[in-house]
Image (tube, rainbow, N blue to C red):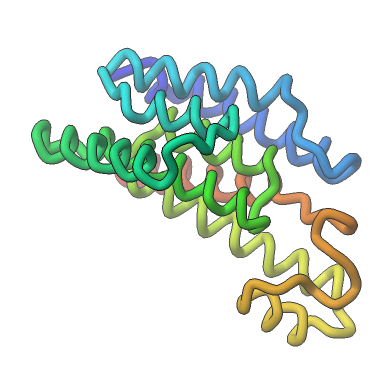
Length: 199
């Protein structure tokens, strides 16, 4: 069992995510004081288990390195999948794929940079499909709830436009901001409860 699997650390991570969510509500920004330590912890875990492709994908994403795309991203994804197949452990593929997908979502304007960093960090700290599904579900569900709250008079139109990849009619997401850190915190709480029930 690694240190990132301990209960006390999971509680600390959840507290940090709740603090980030509260800050995000007030400023529409995720504080680096939360995301950077979580990213460092996730990268450290990946390095400790020898998952170099995940760390390289993180470096490319954080510094927005576009050199060699899409070949570099494809090579990293294949390396992660290859390590997973060779070892029989999904924990080699999950963080690489998550980082690359979240990075593409950020580049497409589907997710904010702070929210994306939190998702990348949690996916590297807990490199398992259940964690990623809980994070994605929490983030997506919270996004829908926020759109309904924000656009309650035109909720169906806003949801339809968002599903089609277009911005809601009252302004861009950058202008109004979706405090997505709350969705990441929600997903992580669901993951914690699910993990506790599975034991």
